[in-house]
Image (cartoon, helix red, strand yellow):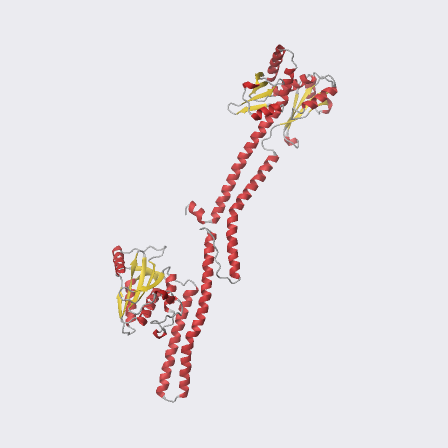
Length: 562
């Protein structure tokens, strides 16, 4: 079975495939969402890190009195930073509205390019008409030390300790990390780091996330002009691509989306099962008219169809049992009454001939009772469940000839005409039940025929058929379905005087059902009376039967001529 067919007919395959697709879609969505979030995070991180340093540079430029001093200061800053600072008109660069809003807030704009890898950094100068820009290929230790020097240069304009600390508080608004003055002895530096501070060197300390509760970070220790005091920049957090809060958020979002997907997959199944549960509850309360309507071709839909068929079968069995009980009690009453009458007659008469006659009557009634019981048991067996069918290739010619011989042996003054197909025509069937069908139809025709009965069989378009016709009065079209109802009898020509128990045609109808075939009655074209035709598939789907094509065509022509 193909995958498409499996997905269409198996609800469990659909659920498994749906879960796989949901998980893949959620994983892809989570990856795209995390990439998008990280791009925004890293962009914000770059701009926040750059804002403080470029604010210091812009402040240094603003403190220069003349244009010459500004150029010299900018040249020295470029040498110190390792990249060339330039001042360009703000109108000369096409900034977006979001970038302009960052300028209005006093922030720095960073444009990052992947191929080749570099970043253009822009910071608007206090005059508002120009921007300070530099191109950075990578962040280096030189740039970190330059930022420390820019900070020292800015603080040099504030002479007292309190003024320096106030300035640091102001600058913290531009930086994304703390700035403070601390005593050197309180920093926990080793001898080498202390010696470097005494030589007015900048000390960079790395703080690993494994030794702290937060992310990895660096601290920049800058020697100040105040004895035994140093400026501490940081801790400066390093960018973490997968912080714990982001991972937890993505896991919760993914679980929520998967839950929605699972609910969407399971909800239709739940609804279908609820419909079946409602049907089961109705049946448990005795309502056998309930029909569960489940749309689809999956297991639940097939289960609902089986449930509907089961309730129909149960309903039909109950009705059949009631009808059978009523009919049996009615049919038994007449022969039992005759037997009782004959027994009374035996007791009241001493005439030997009369006794023999009454005994013969009793034997006939007992035989009639045996026949009735046999018919009832056969019908009950076919009605209650699927009988065991011994399917085999049946030669239709031999079977028709056998039934013709058996019917002629009854000694009726009715002409029995057999029209069998050729000896090569076979059909898959249970021979015993098929013989019973033709025998019952022939027996029924004997009771109503006036002079002639025709028994025929053959194969047409993949279906086998058997047909029995008589030249009796026929059956009115309105009554043709009633003849297959157990113990049913029609008026006029088909009365109780014709004999029988009303089960023969019902048995034929049930056998046709278990053959996966059909039974119909119409008017005989040749004889003018009733024609009963049973058709069924020539072979089961699991069997392959080779047939002579010429024989089949001849049989088809024979059937068309009827």
